[in-house]
Image 1: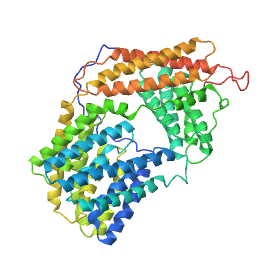
Image 2: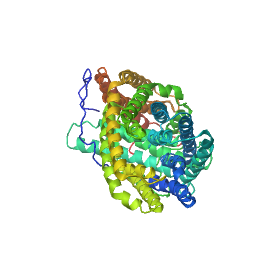
Image 3: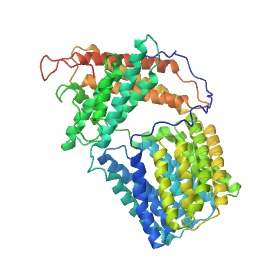
Image 4: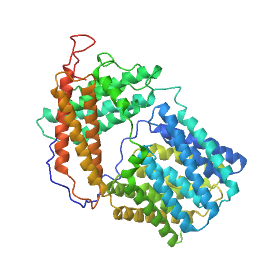
Length: 568
C-alpha cells in the first residue's frame, strides 16, 4: 500500500525550510461564519460603549465577545457546551489577570504570571481539542489585562462586562441552529466523502498508468477527515428526532471508510455526488445499505460505548509543549522589558502563538507570525489617520479588520495576521489616541523579539517523549490489526465485532500516522522506528482491505440472501 522504503531510523536533526510556509490555501468552506459571528458578537457591545462614552471598557467586553470565534465545526448541542466552557475559561483567565494586576505593578511578576497562564491555556486547549483559534485569543486577553491598572473594587464590574458579552457571544454562536440544525454534521460528513474520493481518484489514476506512487498523504488526510466526521456524529443525541439524521449520515461515513480501505473498488464520482447532496438542507442521500441493525451500525454503537481518556491522561503528553510555552513566553516578556518596551505582553503573546505540535511546525508559525505582523504594522500606518478622525470610525475600522482577520486566516496564518495586528493596535487607542510611530515601533520590535526568543525556547525544550509515543502507537496499531485478523479467521464472528475491529484499526492507523508526523518534526530526538511504522501501516491497510472484502460478501440478515455491494 505504500512505496516508502523502510529505514531503521531518522536523523535526530531536521532541516528547517521556508518552502511553502507563506503559500496560500483554499479558504475554509465556512470562512464567513466565524467572520460574521465575530462582527456580530463584537459590534453591539462596542457600539453601546461608544454611545455611553466608555470605550475604555471595551477590552472587558471583547474578552467575552471573542468567544464567538470558537466551535463553528461542532454540532449545536456540543457547540453549546463548548462555548459555555470557553466563556468560563476566558472569564477565569481574565479574573486571575485582573486580581494579579490589582495586587502588584512589578512588571517581572506580571510577565511571569502571564507566561504561566499561557502555558495552562495552551495545555487545556490542546487536551480538549477546542479547535481554532485555540489558546491565542485567551492568552491575548489575559496578558493584556495584566498590564491595565486595576483595583480590587473594579474587578467585579469588569468581570460582569466580560460575562455579559460572553452570553451574547454564546447566543451568536447558537443563532444558526433554528435555520440549519444539521449543518455541522452534514458538512463534516461531506468533507469525509470528498477526502475519500480524492484518495480513490489518485489511486485509480496512478494504477491506471502503471505508476507505483505513495499515496500515504492522501490516505492519511482521508482517514483524518473520517475520524473528524465520526467525532462530530458521535456528539449527536442517540435518541429523538436527530437520531434518524445521525444514522443516515453514519452510513455515508461508513461508505467513506470503505472507499479508503478498498480504493480500487470505489467510484469517486459517486462519493462526490453524495457530498454535494449534503450541501444545503435537502434530503440526505441513501446509500442502498442494508437495514439499520447491520454490523456496520453495531460497530458504531461499540464506538459510542467507548469512554474518552480522562483529561489528566490527555494532559500528560502535552507537558513538553506547556513547558515550551511557559519558558518562551516568560523569556520573551523579560527581553521586551530589558529593551524598555512599554507593552511586554505583545512579545509574550507572539511567543504563545508560535507553539505547535512540533518544532518544524513552530518554525513555520514563527515565520508566518513575523511576516504577517510586520505587514500589519504597515497597514496600521495607512489606517490610523482615518481611524483618528473620530471614535466611531475607530470602532468601525476595528470591526472591518476583525472580519478580515477571520475571513483570511484560513488561507494562511500570516494573511490573517495582517488584519489582526492593526486591529490590536487600534484597540489600544480606545482609551485615547497615541503616537502612531511609537505604536508601530513597539509592535515591530516586540514581534521580532517574541518570535526569536520563543523559537529558541522551543529548541531548548526538547520533546523527548515523541519517540516513545511513536513506539506506543505502533504497538497499538499492531494489536488492532491482530484483533481484526483473528476475527477475519473466524467463519462467523459475533455481530458487530468485525466492524468494530475494523474501525478500531482505522483509528489506530490514523493515530499512528499523526504521531509519526508529529515526532518527525522534532529536533534532537532519538531516531524513530521508521521501518516499524511503514510495516505497521502496510499490514494494517491490507487487513482493512481484507475486512472490507469480507463484509462485502456477508449475507444480509434482513433479506436472507441479498448481499451488499462494496462499491460506494
